[in-house]
Figure 1: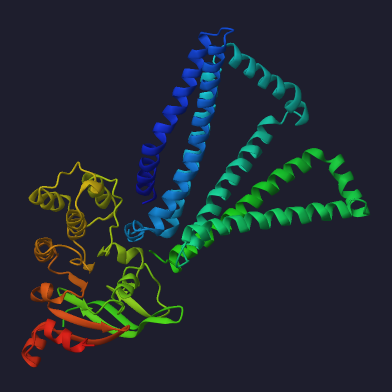
Figure 2: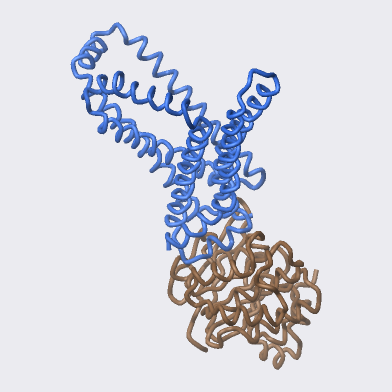
Length: 270
Length: 233
């Protein structure tokens, strides 16, 4: 059933995101073509500047677009009129959530790839070669020595942290929308409110942690900890990455459970 | 009485301080056309949402073919809500594929036959159809399933008399004869002739459950007349 759900999720995103992707790549191509007519004239500068602005706007539209589509798809498909059909399908709420999460995550990745591809197209040629050279130089001279040659290990950890963070954010949005639909009126308002309350709570918690660390900075315990960090940098970096991944997964699981519980037990369709 | 298809015991649903369904108990057999009749706000839609698993009861139980509402019952219950529940950007063909993908009992040929009888082009988007035709498309999709239980929430409300006739004849001619059909409405005179049994509901309580023939023979009244008497202000 998840396969079938995914088929419809992908078709929904495809129809809406493909035009945006084409616009991004089109504006990137336009920018690249403009560069062939490089001249020290004001008309060239205006033309080039405009094509850069267009590319930036198109890329931003694609990024914002995928977020808006992911959020509105979840809300409309589950909690608005369409929910009567979606939630009457012989499918579990877990399967609904997994399919929606997978589609939202993969289309976010595709959007990222499209924007990078746009940059590659716009900078194709000498600029792209310079960028790649600088990138490889950074990896070889800065990243490689810093990670003691374990680039792949750190790369995987970084990638996992990024994936779990993205999954966490998508599930947070779903949880906020699910909580919001419990309201009798202004459901979107409550959903947005939930998101910002959560955001501010995290900010406050973060600030409290920083204050605590500052207060404890001179304590013997902190000194011991700093010494340990200094002596075991590699281990601590791996532990840190593992902690971030685990942290993201725990929160993602909590958000998933909140949404799933509401879909199963606390539905309040319009 | 035929085999029990739907059974409610002490079913209760509250919205805050308001009791929408108050300890209702009844059962429905298979192979019947049942009218769930009551004025607006009587609890009909709440009952249907509980039956289709869109709401959870606060107390009591509801069983469809021996199962609590869930994935199992959704595969055997064909539900027509009282609103436009289909994404209007989909074409008729796409929504047929959607039903075919998810419901094993969906009969594609039956759906296309009915669309063709109505002259509805399968390539059109639902948003381009009139309100009446949208209602017909939705009903055709539901009635193209060989479900065990059809649940139709206000299928004839807000449509013109010709569409109403079409809807009623579609229900009669297409439902699986071994299945039961629950039709929730307050427009009784229009559907009275097709009903086998009626359930009167008011303020979340079952006032009466009777065979239509019994009402006619014992009370000497039509269901519509009895309804007007029972629900008189």
